[in-house]
Amino acid sequence: MNQLNLRSYRAPVFGAVLVLVILVIGLVYFSFVPAQENAEFKQWVTKVWPKARAQGVSRKTFDQAFEGVVPDPEVLASANEQPEFVKPVWEYLDTALSEKRITEGRDLLRTYKPTLTRLEKKFGVDRHILVAIWGLESAYGTHMGDLYVIRSLATLAYEGERRKFGFAQLISALKILERGDIPVTHFQGSWAGAMGQTQFIPTTYNAYAVDEDGDGRRNIWTSVPDALASTANYLRASKWQINAPVVIEVKLPVDFNFKHTGLKHARPMAQWVKMGIKDVNGGSLKSSAKSGAVIVPAGANGPAFIAFNNFRSILRYNNAIPYALAVSLLAKRFQGNGKIESDWPLENLPLSPVQSKELQRILSGLGHKVGKIDGMVGSNTIKAIKAYQSSKGLKADGYPGLALLNRLRKG
Ligand SMILES: [Ca+2]
Image (tube, rainbow, N blue to C red; front, side, top):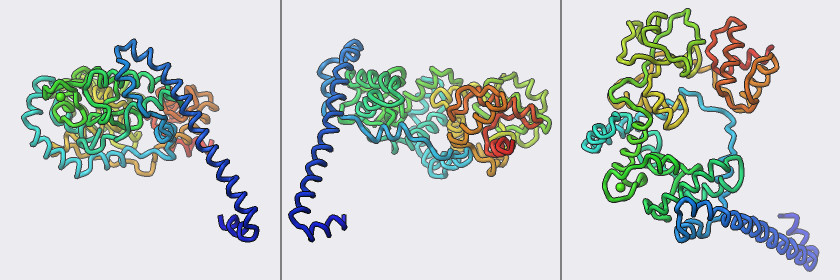
């Protein structure tokens, strides 16, 4: 900038022309490129119409929904974001189970006591779990996302890696508008289309949202009874069992074989007792549940839990073990318990996607079947880790931590 200014003082005419040329090129470029992109997008929108119409969306709703809509670059940026590091489960739980969230939840349990009593009876879902999910999904309705749902989903459906997801959600979102549950002006959510106090995506909304306050609209944005009832309805459909346990912390015997860990390895409680598992204080293991699965969210050197069927129901809401653990423990904290007794292995950090890829590459090089080398640790990679650990006489916990990667790097 400075150089250009200096030059224009020395040769005013030349400088002025140069500036003008740059300006014109810039103007043409910046107006033409988005205009062209927007024209392509508009063209694409015309192809969405017949599919929306086939789902019962009217022309009027469709036109209103897309009025002035252009792709949102920030939505694409969020969709493509690759985290440089992954938050360890203990840090995630610290935030999820903050004193503020616990205190606010207790207050809301009192405020909405009549509603929650009714919902417990109607849907058979425990009140503490409903409020815990509310607290984690949207911080009790204070963090719902303020992006226009149609724009976010149209962006995802139009370009990028999530086109299929985006398209299905977009059509569902148009159906929500058609039904008149929410006006276009208030139709807001996260970049991925998670909406309202329950953070339902449109397909989930259409399947499970409930009009509890009886105004004819399923309003998960500003009606607390609607939001709580919608969550309860979803959990009921996910086979929630009222008054049944969700998860308990346990103490594993020193000779425990970690190949038995993981949600796929559920067993009758009597078998776990026989294998020497105790309650976390070393007493005998008691539970009203018939069966459960041992999980070690931070590997063999961290806390161990037995997760029951209700834990799986929470995973249907959001398929991440730290999330289900946070919901379960927050519900317990409301009632004055749910503190984790064992220490977390603070030095054995979880791997970033790049590190996970490296782990997969090394394991694959050693002849283990890790599945796709994509930095996503799925069941195949966990199986491969367990196989490697067993072959080296290590605890086969399948945990993809830094300790394991460092060992593999040394060869
Ligand atoms: Ca309503």
